[in-house]
Length: 304
Length: 183
Image (cartoon, rainbow over all chains, first blue to last red; front, side):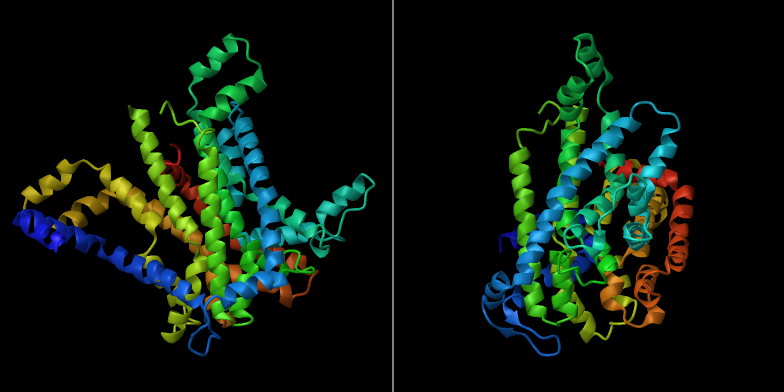
């Protein structure tokens, strides 16, 4: 009722403007409702149902969630995802910042270097995964060949349950280019006066980085770490390509997303898979909130 | 003052990017799959194409940022000359938005070209496979050791992206600036 009255108070001109605006935005609103909001709500409903794809969903309350937490494969998928994220995200941030700093040192042909580091981020993930699959090959792969040159015997990588996750983490660093471009832009915005002033005060390079550079780019670090974390929780394509969607060997690369895909498209348990999706969603939201809280004091927003 | 404005803008961009990332495709794909299944769209390109036309909040936001930056005098002048809202949009705003539209088109092209999950769940007929799905599938069917064959296909799948990147490098950089991630 109140909105209705307010609508009447508008002049004819204003009402026309409002209607025009709504018409202009309607394709997006329809798309957003149809492809995001409605499916979002439906998947919450499905997560409380028993739903083999060809039948209609039957309400079973919390049974899916109870079963999930006693399902050994789900628990190990949580562990594998946590393991991957715990190493891949900080390492990605470290190498991203390091590369950006090196590129920021007035190197010759900067745009060429930037291109070299950025290209892997836009090449098809499947192509990247296949190249790494070949490089990780224990016998013919280049990585173990290099290791053998120094007289050591390389591990079985993706064939060995112990080394499969480290292999994936190593591969993830290949995609650090997007972050490098963003860090580089942030580094170029760090005021030269600050760096020069610290040099006059006798700060050496590490002190400059610790007290000037890192605080100045901290909002961008937070951005990259949070988006990196969200991406790591949904890590899918590389693993699916490299293991054929099996999560082998011995479920050591069974990520949350892989098991979710298996539940939906190998076992056709849509209710169970929806419950997995919702657990993934809640984990992502919780970690994002935690990251914001924890970083609150460490991040410096230009003088605010 | 300017830094305040840009910090605020960066925060908004951040919030939008996060919101679209936090709502993972993994949450919505099951209901979508079921709807597309009922519509008989499985094993067609429709599930891969139709949603792209209507619902990428990030692109909407990106274009909005661009439109906000256009001087209002232009659209006012068009209106004074008697153009309708649609006419103003079509004849004045849209031509000016070409660089922004190029960025969106480029990002979407790369996104679709590289997409694996969508084709994986919606396409089962091999003749419909997209390039990502096709080369991923060679892994199984040509045995573990025929890497030369797989690598050749992989290189061919990358070529369009590389060519595009070199021709549109400036658009890419503009795109990164436009999204405001530079802060």
